[in-house]
Length: 102
Ligand code: TYC
Image 1 (tube, rainbow, N blue to C red):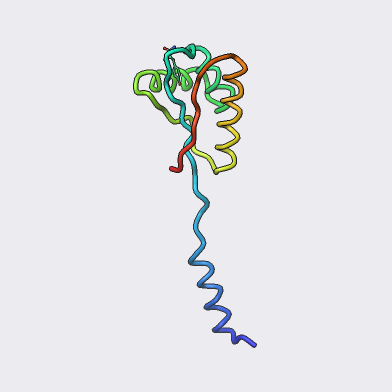
Image 2: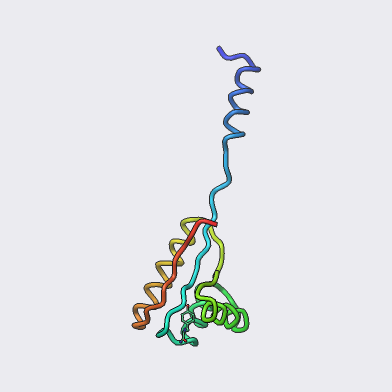
């Protein structure tokens, strides 16, 4: 039978080991073919941005090669990457959307 002290130290050991779940950045990469207007639509549709925010991020990606659309838990980020990639391919655009641990 564990004493109160013993069970408290087990609880403490478990609690101090617990890490917050990792977060992932969803990134858009530049390419020479995807129309600017299409990228703006993607940012509005999948990342809840207004037209001004979406245009700012699109231009950043266009000029710098990469830009962050948002930061999410793993499963949310993975779903966004799939939905954006599917939407781009449906419209025959090569737009690349990836995730990385942040
Ligand atoms: N470079 C593209 C063009 O000139 C626009 C673009 C922006 C493409 C952002 C992809 O993630 C991207 N039409």
